[in-house]
Image (cartoon, rainbow, N blue to C red; front, side):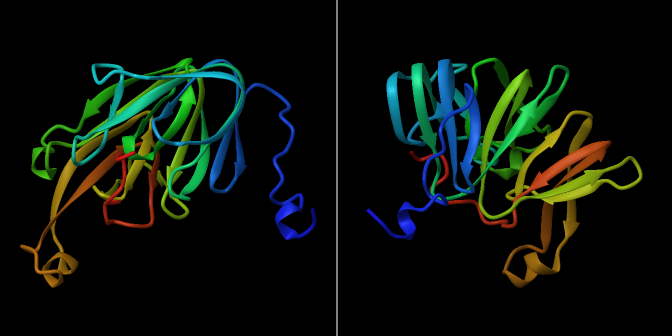
Length: 225
């Protein structure tokens, strides 16, 4: 069989080590040797001897989705083999979480992660006006975290002298050491869209990095699969 489709650009590369790698811009490959975690519905293909278990709807079985507070169901993948994960052709990235780090991320951006990582649900105080509160998942421990993002994310440095203000619908996540609070401001854009003229942003202060997606519209299908 010949043609561009069968070129090296699209051909799956041989696995070289267990764990998570970026297969291409839209897909993450996980070489499973034991157990890993993924969002339900995100697996697009697999090979080998793998078993799948949907996690329950209780504590530890779901990641809270920011803004709406809806749950993101998870599944455990166990055994020996390879699995490929993607979500609506969004761009994929891998974050290395090291001991002592904490990475706070919007649940809708989580694709898969090492079972060695632990996570907890955190809320931004005073965020009730955003519709159910502003929920995020805080990852810690040691391992890799696979993320998806509509478009190419922006990584903005935050310093004590220069806090960063982010639209609550556009936030992907932020690193250890940043303090968050809600900031209200008058917005010409909000007024032009027929709103009250008041906009709410998440203000991040301290020293670290904030990750933002290049869209402020909440994805309609996020977390539905």
